[in-house]
Image 1 (tube, one colour):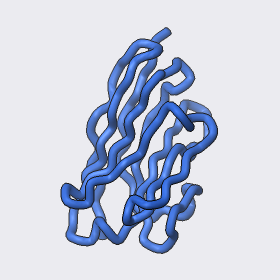
Image 2 (spheres, rainbow, N blue to C red):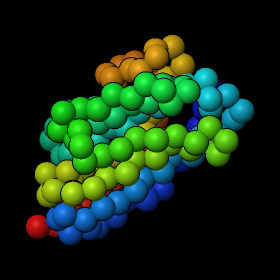
Image 3 (cartoon, helix red, strand yellow):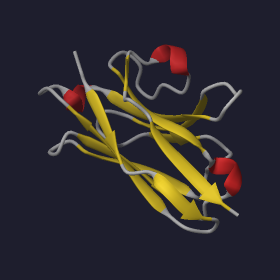
Length: 124
């Protein structure tokens, strides 16, 4: 079992940057694909980015491609989401997630474990 604890987030002006981190417990972090999602009020949870267990394969949603970067440090059991050129429409609660069975899962139903969520608010 994996427990995910998120940090980062907060309030930023449009055009600014934030970095989210997601630290995993346990010694098997490197066997899990990791992903980031977000959910705005009244909307479905939206896939943003995913990285394979080795870091070799990465997928992005079109809405964040070129602005967001996912990375992982298996030595630190941590996955990151660097967010640049933030827009007011990026405002949402952001979640990290872990999955052991799919190489690079891109749907929320494929993930087994979730972080607690962290609020990101982008002001105009």
